[in-house]
Length: 620
View 1 (cartoon, rainbow, N blue to C red):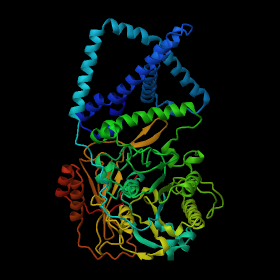
View 2 (view 1 turned 30 degrees about the horizontal axis):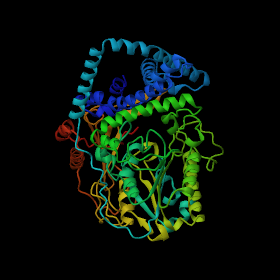
View 3 (view 1 turned 60 degrees about the vertical axis):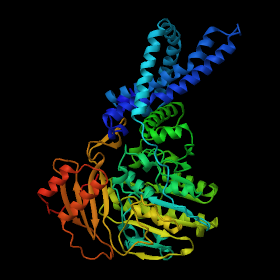
View 4 (view 1 turned 180 degrees about the vertical axis):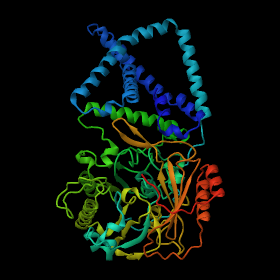
C-alpha cells in the first residue's frame, strides 16, 4: 500500500521505469522480513523460558510471542489510514494539533494492536493446518523477491570522493558558510545600496574579497543548496526541488564528504524536508544536522545493500521516516512543522525552527564541536513573503499588512547582518577568527528571481586575500574555491571553478527554475514539483552570458517558450559578445543533452523558429 501511495504522488519512484518500480515492490520488504524473523524468534525464546512459570497467565505468553508482528501490522495500519484519509479528505495524523485528536489516534492504534495480538494465534493455527500451502506461498514470494533482487542488482556505487592523494600538512582552518535566503545584493549597503542595511559587512569589506557579479544556479533553495555543497549543476544531479534527492554517485560526491575525509566535523543548520542533508540523501556528509546527530553508514551489509540497490534503500528509509515522524508527533508535544509555511513564515515557529533557534544551535556547536569544523547555516528571515526580524530599523513597527514590502525586507537583511556580526565576535572572542574561512552568501534573489546578482563575501584567515572581483561567478564555484584554498585540486566531477585560480575568460552560467506545477500535501504543504518526463522537476533552463539571460521555458514541452533579457552586469569585465539568441538557445539545449535530458521536442522548436521577444522569465 505504501508503494501504491508513492506511485500516485510525486516521489522518488517518479524517476524510475516501470520494471524498476516493480523491483522495489518485491525487494523492499526483505530487510523488514529478516528483522521481523529475528525479533519473532527472540520473542518465542523468551516465551519458552517463561513457560514453566505456571502462575504466569497464558495471555502474557501470547502477548510476548505476537507483539512484534502485531506492532508491525499496527504501524502499517497507521500509514494505511493516513494514506486513505489524506487521499480522500486531505487529513492525516501529522495535521493533528490537539491532545484530544492525538489521543483519538492512540486509542485507534491500541485497539488495532490488541486486535492483531488476539487474532494472530488463530491465524497462525490456521496456517499450521495448511502448512503445505503456506510454505508454497512463502516460497513463491521469496523466489519473486530473489529474482527482483538479482534483476535490480547494479555494480556497487563508487564511494570515492575524487580527493587526490594530497597530504595537507598545514593546520586546516575552520570553514563557515553563513547564508541567508532570498537576499539580492541590490539591497545591501556593502554593494552600494543607499540604506545602511549591512553596517557590519561594510566594516569588514576591507578585510574580505567582495564579488560584485555573483549568480545563483537555481531559483529554488533545494537546487541552490545542492549546487553549493556539491559544486555541480542542478541539471547534473537532478536536484532542483523536492521530491528530488541525490542519487547514484552524486550521493557521495560533495564538499562535506571531502572535508570529512580530511578530518572535519561537519555541521548543518538549515531546515528539514527542503534542504536537510539527510533528507536530500547526501551520504557521509554531516555529523550534526538540524537538532540531531547523523549516524554515518558503516562498512557493513547495509552499506553494501545501499551501494547495489540504492533506490530500494531510499524507499525503505522514506517509509521508515514517515512512520517515525508520525509516531513522534503523536507521542510527544512536538508538532510536525509544515515546511512550506515555515519557509513562508505563515505561522509562529517553534524556537528551534526560527532563525534565533538556528543561531543558538550554531553558537553551541561552534563552542563545543571538534576542530576543525565545517558549518553550513541557512537563515530564513529575508525569504518572505512576510519577513522575520527582531527589531524594526527602517519601519515604525513589525506590522506587515501586505506581502513583499521592501522596508521590511531591508529589516530582515539588517538582521542577517547583525547575526553575522554576532558570529564574527564570537569567533574573535574564542581566538578562532583568524583560523576560520568565512563565506557570506545567499541562495537566490528576491522572490526567487534569477535575474538579480547575489552577495558573495569571503573573509580569508589573516586577510590573506582582499579586494573586489567583478568577473561573473556562480554559487557552484564556492566549493572548488574552498578546496583550492586548502591546497587541494578540486575533483573533476565538480562543474564549478576555483575563483582564485580561474582564467580571465568569462563562461556561461546555467540557471534552473522548478516546474510551475507543484503538489501540496495534507494541510496545504507545497512540498514537491509535479514530475512529468522528460524534464520532471525542471521548469525553465537559462544561460547567463555577458549580461544577457537566455531562457527556454519547458513547462509545456509541446510549445517551449524562448526569451532573453538584459540583466544588470555589475562592473563585469566580460567583453561584448557576438552570441546570437539562436546560438544561445542551442547552447542551452546542448547543456541539457550533455546532462542526460531528452530534448527532442525543444530542439525541433528552436530549429523551426527563434522568438526575439524580450520579457522577464516567469519564476514561482
